[in-house]
Length: 210
Image (tube, rainbow, N blue to C red):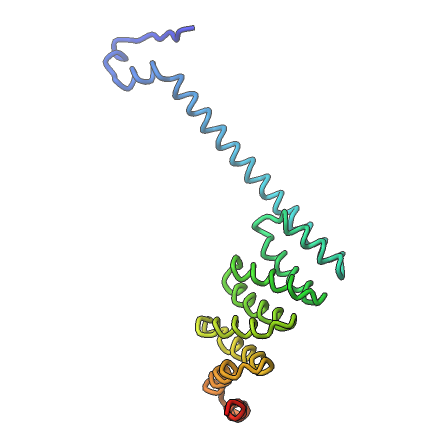
């Protein structure tokens, strides 16, 4: 049925009134669509919050109730469907659980994913974790390489921690150049009673290199 409008002389002289009277249906449809979109967003936000809470509860239940290999399996299954809000926490638990279970390859992979996607602070710890997992799994050379590459780029707050881990790992791997660089950095930063220890380690590594 055609729309019927009644225009007064005043309306006929007003462009705005003319537009409203002829295009009110289009405007009403647009307004309805806008309201539906707003309602849909509100529903989505509420659903997302419920899903987040459910996912957090599910992860917490796994951590609280599962142990040993079953816990690792449950965490790996959970990770496949984990929302972004809990993915980093799941990866962290997988890395820790896998390392406890001496599944060092799985631990290294979880740490690697955290090093890529984790927030500031977690990424740096994940790099250290990955290097440790690789070394414990028998690939000390790769662990040394990761730490040696990371040391010059590490934030100042992490540099000493990285150097300590690199020094010990490189010495075990007989990677003397990397061990010397780490011990020299530690010696340069040392003060007080610990400095003679690092001075001795630098001299010891240099002697082994000759």
